[in-house]
Length: 238
Ligand SMILES: *Cc1c(COP(=O)(O)O)cnc(C)c1O
Image 1 (cartoon, rainbow, N blue to C red):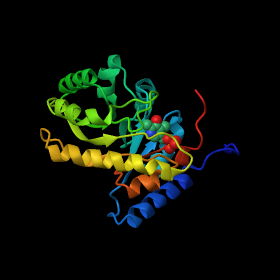
Image 2 (image 1 turned 90 degrees about the vertical axis):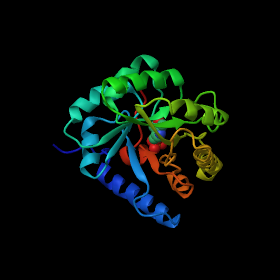
Image 3 (image 1 turned 120 degrees about the vertical axis):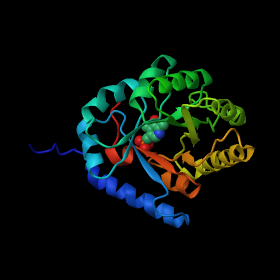
Image 4 (image 1 turned 180 degrees about the vertical axis):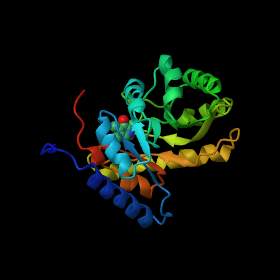
């Protein structure tokens, strides 16, 4: 069957994105391969996800438990890791623990407790990132910067959660340069949490940067960039 003329060339887009990531990494004087792509596949159909994984994607980002729950079984043959990048309702903690390999958006202690218990039952240790609301936006999830050290301290008590770093979604701006101060603050916050030496927590991962601003995020130390539109094209409203 002929693909529709408006179809998106996932493979070509992915090649461009991977090249741009590599260029930005090297330009920042960082080692090749030190920035990992999280291909954000929310709203994307399973066939396009298959194409992306066939073309080299190893990590998928989804923002809803229910959607990931329905897609992952159809893609069970793929080796990709699934990361939750959206806010999680407490009543979905058990399901999230089952279907995700990482939680990038942890911002609540009761949720952490539920995830910890669920992971204990599943005999798994879940890598998690703490989401920080760097722009103090009412519309966004994440803890406030000044709560981050105390929050990390509390998380270190959960033996089935493996805190790896921080995640943020800065306020949207047309000019990616305007996001730079937020990326810098997230990096500095991670450094100060490490300095406190909170219960064995290391802050090796910084998940920051999306389609329009990832080169700036990489310059400022991102280790995970979450990119959807630049790979899969514009999303349909839902
Ligand atoms: C949708 C989403 C992205 C990807 O955004 P694009 O602009 O399409 O690259 C990244 N992070 C989070 C948390 C998202 O919800």
